[in-house]
Image (cartoon, rainbow, N blue to C red; front, side, top):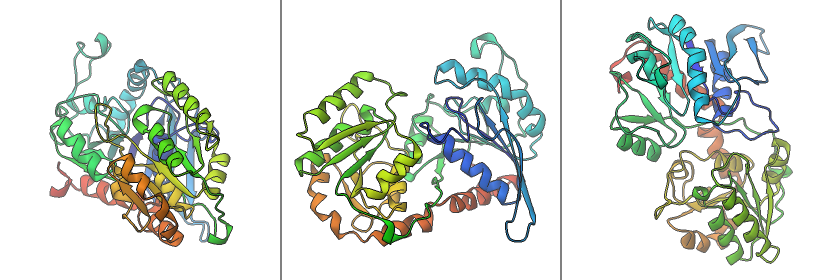
Length: 385
C-alpha cells in the first residue's frame, strides 16, 4: 500500500531527540512502523528532520526486504500561523501528482487541515489569494487532529474521515466539526527496562508543556497538600503565556522545597526522571472557562511503560488509558485527585507495564492504522465516515 503522512510544520518529523516534540514523534514512529509492515510510506516534514531521504527496511533475522520510507522536507519549521500555509504550498503539487487519482492513502496530521482542500479544490479567495487548485475527489484522505480544531463546520469533502486520539476527543471533535469522528490511540516505543531496574525516589513527576490548560498549578497543589515532593518538567518555550511559566516558578519557590522546577529537558533526562519517580501526575483542567480536552496523554503512557502508576483528572485520553484502581487513579477534580494520593502504593507496577504492552506500543498503533487504511483502500462501507 502507498501511504503519505503529512506532519506539522511546527517541528520537523524525526525531530532532534534533545528538543521538545509531540505529534511529530508519533507520526514519525507510525511512518517507520508502516514501512516495516511492507508499505511504501512518504512522510512530509518541515526542514530539519534527522532522517532525510529514502530508507529501506529489512527483517533483521531473515534479511527479507520490507517497505520503504521517504522523508520529504518542505519549509523551515515554525510555530507561526503562516508556517502551515507555506508548508501546504510546498507539498500540495507533489501530493496531488502522486495521490490525486485515489491510489494510496493520505493521512493529514497538521493543525490547519489544509489537506482537505486537495480533495475539494479551492479558488484564489482562499489562503490570501495565493493559489487555485482543481478538485481531486478520488483522493483518499483522513485528518488526524492532535488538539483543538480551527474550524467549526464539516470539511468540504464527501468522507472527511476525521480522527481524534481518544474516545472523548473524537466525540468532542465531532461536536465541533459537525461530522462523525473516530479515534486512534497513539503508541510509544517500549523502553528496554526490567522491573528490578526501577527505583522509587518518592516524588511525583509532572511532564507537560507549561501551559494553564494542562493544570500544572493543580498538580503542584495536589502534591504539596499531601506533603509529596514533585518535579515539574516540560516545554516552557513553545507556550501561549510566559506569565503562566512565571506563575509556576513562583508556586514552586513558595512550596517549602516540595516542588522543583526543571522545565525543558532532553529525552535522556526524561527517561531518568520516569525511572525514578513515584508516579506521574497530570491534572488538565476539565471544568470552568479554561476547561479543555486532553486529546491523549503520551506522558501517561510513558510513565506506565516504566512501571509507574498515574494519578490525575479524568480528562480525555486519560479515561481510555487508565483503568481506575488498576494502573492508577482518576478524579473529577483536583480535590478528588488529592484523596487518592495515599492509595498510589496499592498499584501493581506490572499492571502498568502490561497496559502499554497490550494497547499502546508502536506495533499496536501500526496494526490499527494498517487495518483502517486497508478498509479505506478497498472502499469498504466501514471506511466511509
